[in-house]
Amino acid sequence: MQGYGPVCRGFVVTTLLLVLIATMMPVMAFAEGISSPPQPSQGPGGADYPFAEVVISRVGELPSGAWVFAPEGMSGSERSRAPVVLFLHGFGASGPALYRGWITHLARRGNIVIYPDYQPAGFLVPDQSAFEANMLAGLRQGLDEAQLAPAAIHVVGHSLGGVLGVAYLAASPNVGLPPARSLTVVAPGGCRTCGTTSGFGVPLPENLQPPGNLLVNVVVGSDDALVGDGDALAIWSLLDDVPTGQKRLIEVRTDRYGSPDLIADHLFPQGESMGGGVDALDWYGLWRPLDGLIACSETGTMCDIALGTEESDLFMGHWSDGTQVMLPVPVSEPLSDQYDRHVAHFLMARACVDPVGEG
Image (cartoon, rainbow, N blue to C red):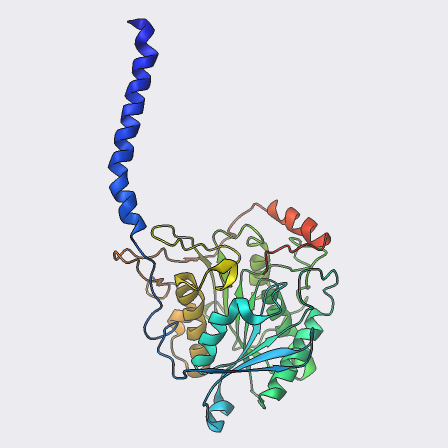
């Protein structure tokens, strides 16, 4: 009988595994039938747009030109009061196609969006020293094209664009461009002076004096293995003079509860990347707080949605079975002490290869 011990044990283990799998199959099948949240029907991040179409115009040439997106049918008086959004893309994404969903949302809500090229097309751009000047030139041309002279603007940047957004805070007073009323930085990467991508990208300003009324939202993704959180934390430290009630740093989290998965990686702000589309991470994790940030700075409304840390402020929608999507995590401590991943980022950048995966 002793000789049959291993065989019997193996049989028992196999049987238990089969029973476990059989038990889980209905649950797995049920989970596969659970769909992700739709876009909110109204409110910040929602689909109740006052404008049905967007007018797109182009000004200047690469790399110092810009795209301008404006609501169609906006009156002259509405146009003069419309919030202006400076939208700064990630490295390599000089064309706006990857962000078209977010840009269209902003324009249909009544904002005028200026999208500077700031770089030549593609990823083989070994010299990034002109990026800031190109950004400023693109914005200036975009404002002229739209015949706008706003008192202040809203700055949004993804990846390298997030670092450029911070650089804009320091540059604008010196070049006659409007100050930033709000700053949204998403998954920033490509800070030449932060130590995580040394030798590549754009330096952060050394002596930043942000406007006293500046509102700030910094967003990182829980599964961003390309740039991590090092640059976000460096930017957060640089914005130390911004009062606590005027800024927020959050980590948007991956949620695989239903289908399709909601993946908070480096590219999630690019809703049209990898053949996918916008999802709840966009509508609730990015569009909703930016709509709130603009409203908060312009009219003093929706400030909790823009900067709050309560569950209702961080709401991300519900899966089709009523389960709540994982909430973002407000961050007050470094997200990770692991910076080895930035070594690969640095080596790829030095080799003139895309270090941040189209962003």
